[in-house]
Image (tube, rainbow, N blue to C red; front, side, top):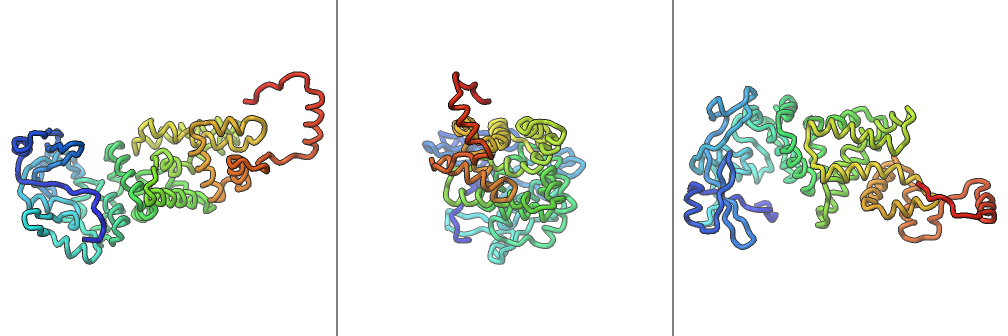
Length: 382
């Protein structure tokens, strides 16, 4: 209806999961919180849900926390109940394949045409039922270019701290939807506007709120712009690089403090990364398959300043070199890293002759004396 191709369709029916299984031989039932039917057609899996009921805190008290968050939501209902328990009116539209009509119980079509994102029911109650709805509001507003209805956006700032009650693993999945859907910049701006980003990345928000130069914000925005560009071009995007961008500034600041205390640069970044990751995992889970390469991207930044001897070639051979190099380019573009150093590494990869390190006063004479007086191979550099 918006002139875009849907990612998928949600299939809903009044049939219970067991009845769906009776109809389709290649069907498996999954889920404990709410049973779903997975119907297999070759490699395709069609997920079928039964209409659900219950909305606006209608669940029994023992199904909710003291803050109103739903713990269980597995009451079957009819199609109208299923529509009205959904979060936004534009998400409560049904396409009837029997006569190809749109079924609308929540004035969703009007909101769609007006470009309005509106929660169904009392907004504060719905956010308390599931605080992730605040993130979904920001994501849909950025993705669709819709404005959030005044009563829908009003409670967000006050209720944003409720995200602390959401399991970190679920927030990780929501962050991927926010930043890997092609509208990362818009999502970031919405999250910061409503005070939601601080709940997901408190250390980063603290740095951005206190920045005395523009490069921390510029780095994040350029990283997110690059992510959006890669999504549009259907190129792969790894969460490791995304999180490296979002969390770099607090790591950099802590590493600088450690270096001021005499800790070597490479070790300082490793220590700072470990400290930051320990804090961040309390808010958002980051699987090790992403956190490990993220830390490697950070750690390699200190090695880019080593442009002499065999060290550049060793760094080129590192499996994370390309990601670390791309990250260094972002830092240079933001004004945080040396742009000439970035050009040097670019030239080195292109095999240009001018990729040799600049000579220091007297260095040519010293090298000549070493060559003339060398009798045995020099020890390998670290």
